[in-house]
Amino acid sequence: IKGGFDISLTTYNRLKQLFNTFQIVHLHSFSPIRLMAAKASNTKVVYTIHGLSKGIRKENVIKYTIREAVKKYCLNKVDCFVANSDSTLTKAKSHYGLKKTKQIVILNGVSIASFSSFNILDDKEFTIGLVSRFTPRKRIDRLLNAFYLFLKQGHSGRLVLVGDGVNLSDIKQQIQTLNLDSQVELVGYSNEVDKYYKQFHVCVQPSDNEGFGLVAVEAYLYGLPILAFEDSGGLKEVIAPLEPENIVKTERELAERLLWYSKNKVQVSKYSNKRIAYAQNNFSIERMERDYYNIYKNLI
Image (cartoon, rainbow, N blue to C red; front, side):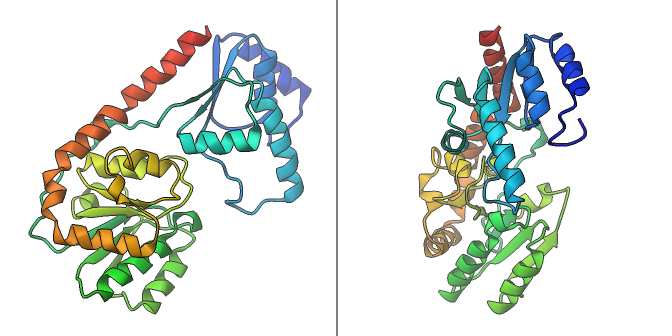
């Protein structure tokens, strides 16, 4: 497939022939020619969506309109439409319709074995952590504003930001504007986030409209609480069942929750096993595999 609007009849026929050798074709990204060939074959088609890009990035209006119209037509023809959160499914139904399409939510899973044990940091300096890409959608500005309010009330602590991205210069500028240079540590991108999670007392993910809350699962597997906003989409769905008090509406509320944890650092280690068990029981890759396998069995 040479591009998003490839309409080669030869490619279409080759794909259709290939798909006819399978009972199930499971797609995770959209390509018109691929999805139409799958539907024209004798196979059953499962399509998983991990979030909607609508309004997230600038796109050519004409191309976007044509692509989404074709996508809406194709997705209403699949045998099972899977979303990675209720938030993603709600947005997809609003955007694509899907009234006659079988729909199901399967929450993402991770490899539990890849996470190591947590540390007890009750006697250490209160440390707030963020592990994220630095993009507009991550709303790191909200965390910096809340941290500023936290410090303004006379409390102490440090904020460690792990990551990199297009918003790095804006974040640096905001740190300077709020005079937070001595309290905020920018460590850059890292493949060894394990060592940073072990420094944190609490994690914050200030983003909005997340498709899923993988960062919350990671925090819980390290035994850490994580704070997020009411408008965080799928992220809220991970946190609210266990710690609804950690869902905030405003930057001031976030500052207040940070204050509570700074005064009650012992609560982090006290409930760490509960957080770990919650993540292990609900967000393992094995649970995710079973959910998909049940879909496959039902379709064939």
